[in-house]
Length: 230
Figure 1 (tube, rainbow, N blue to C red):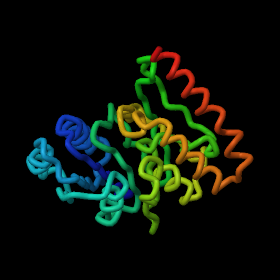
Figure 2 (figure 1 turned 135 degrees about the vertical axis):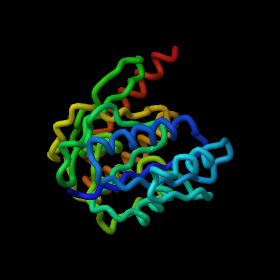
Figure 3 (figure 1 turned 120 degrees about the horizontal axis):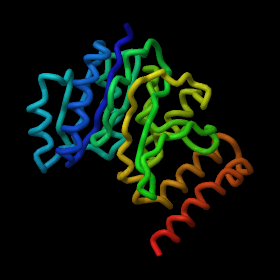
Figure 4 (figure 1 turned 120 degrees about the vertical axis):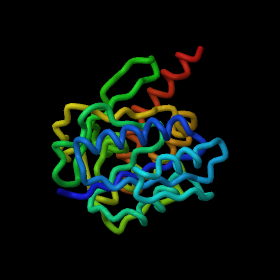
């Protein structure tokens, strides 16, 4: 059985962390070879205390200031000893049996989220030229000597995915459950910055023409958000 390192990064989100950690503990009943790593950014709201309270189910944790979410993820990467990696940040959680059919990385996990219209939806698999093919929380990565580029403070996960040479053809795990993705995060509040970073990564990887062509979808989504706000 492959050891899977699940990494949770958190900062000032006690309730989100407790929900995530509880789901990881429950998932161990379906998949036993889990190494759980928690990187707290020096929270001041009681999160660090909650991590300490849950430490019996955590293999490695630290609470200290960091330089942002991807710096924290890199800390988790360096601490991980598994041959497979899954990033499940505070507020994201497993629902039901997600991992019992897991055998080898890379693999996609089914992901559900609540969209801008308040609908509960499946996260679709998309072409890697559009953006990251699956939600970051729905990808089990191979453990390689690859780290996040912290110059992209919102979308380094997209570059991290491409650095592995992955695409949308990765096998989807036949799970009875799913991962719930908490869509209320930095990328959801800094929409324009997020899209600019994705455009820049896409341009560098696939060329300017491809970057411009695939920009049409995020542009349309931004327009829809503006209309909905009005």
